[in-house]
Length: 224
Ligand code: ATP
Image 1 (cartoon, rainbow, N blue to C red):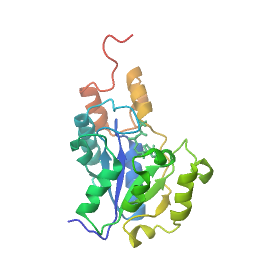
Image 2 (cartoon, rainbow, N blue to C red):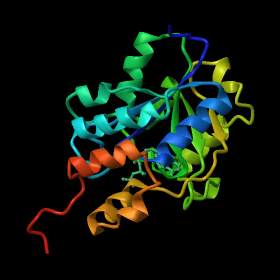
Image 3 (cartoon, helix red, strand yellow):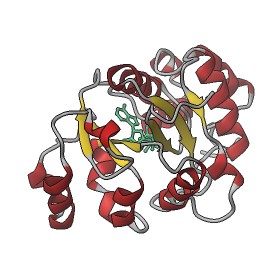
């Protein structure tokens, strides 16, 4: 049963593949803020190259991953929707389904700094809160922000995470999480090199098996 008093926080991404950086982050946020968390895989991410694995494979890996994290949900609506996977559209759909439920976007510090490049980025604040988490390799400081983003930050940052429950959208809160120096880029590079021992431990064993069984992220057979 959905409880509209509990904010719904979304972690969007390509999940190409999903790894413990995503999963532990989502679980840390869920527990620390007492929110529901859904992982939202993008079909066609607007700001980056097309994912290497297909939507079906990325969804299958997420489904295997959440077996070990049963309190995390998956919202696959962007995989079903044609066209670019704009977060603003996803939030508008969710808002129409739950007009009074607080919604939030979980963004790593790296993603936050890129926010002004997102489609209709200012509209996002009318649709959802932002939960910003630190990410190894990116410093979360207002001096790193573009001026428009810094202005939004200064107007919207709230030290008390209760702000997530006081309104349905519009606040920015920062949540400390255990740092996970893991990236999908590094995992794909390790897989291409065949460095399987470096990769194991960075993602759930069931996801690792799926990657191997489906020969994902391998170089084409005739590659040098
Ligand atoms: P890639 O290396 O392909 O860019 P990624 O590991 O960054 O992939 P994404 O699917 O692009 O994964 O990330 C989705 C979201 O999860 C982003 O908001 C990103 O900042 C966040 N994120 C991913 N990995 C981590 C991590 N290790 N720590 C904190 N946030 C993370």
